[in-house]
Length: 503
Image 1 (cartoon, rainbow, N blue to C red):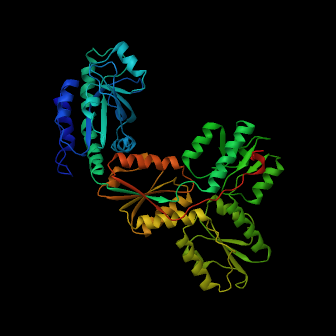
Image 2 (spheres, one colour):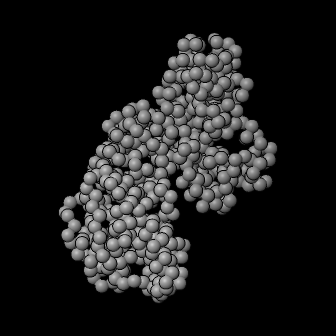
């Protein structure tokens, strides 16, 4: 309709950053939509459909925005286009619109050849579609190979009849939202016109210690049934924790939250001896999911402290791994979180001093601190092999190479994941802009503006599926090439604890 066009034009104003955005009114219905689609210029330029629509879901209110992740036609519509149009980048656009203050839903949009009400509305709602319109499926048919988007602002709701005076007020309310939608679509269009190549760093995502820890909880749930209590997050990733919670795991901060006799799992980051003793005193059945590489650091701490050394632990204050290691010999271990601390830390005997490193630190970060300690304490002794785990080192080497070629790097991982945050820092030191994202919905379209080459990796605690979602979204936005840089091939497997080992 003309009011829809006018509303979108007001939102765009004179802010056309591509100098080639075209707004075109289609008119109402499939016949007009097919006519406009037939005149669409050839090529791969992005195509977006925006306007108002009718709610099918009772959860939608007037003024709510639906970003389609799939557009399909009502199979009963006359001349309905076959198949459907999928939009893996829908979450990116939805996040942009939410940043502009809109209430946004992501889901299917269905197009039909007539206004829907009553039984027809109920039939279409049963397909899972959120909104119905009269044009999108016909407008987007034949758009294979182009970035596509579909945004509908809810006018009439699923409650009550379509044919009542209140609907006109709701249409006007929906039209007032469209200028804001135009702003978000502009960000989408700029991003869709920028990217050329995706570079995937390899290795990325799960390491052997993370896979082992997750398997411990899953096997415990299978063998013993829920609930299974886990002290702290089993690994530092929101999606992993949510998935295990859905299976029946209960995550607690401390053991006093665990009921007597309940099966308890220690996380991959390890625990201090005092925690083990507390569990033993309460006779809690325990399965230890501590990563074997963290267990190695604990053993080194006991060995160094046992021979009388002051042990300097290079790590981040408050991290669960450092807390566990400090607990092995609290009177003998000093935490050294940064180079400034390395210049001031005091030891009992400069001739009897050793160091350990948190397994998830950045390699170059730790090296700088160790160099500062060696200048102060020439007799400094380190572990027999690197404490920083193979997975951390491999992922940092891979992203360093990728970042050197990329304009932007996206690191998939949660904010409390030390190894994921270090990957961001490593990428920035290699010269790229870098951001940590929990999942695809955290990617800001504005970051992609002007980024011809985008690098993607994931921390060792981030599921591979999250990377797949990001790659699918960026490819849908128009990235033409996807290549992989492999720094190492990992074949490490850790044995499960005997309590959950398969017979």
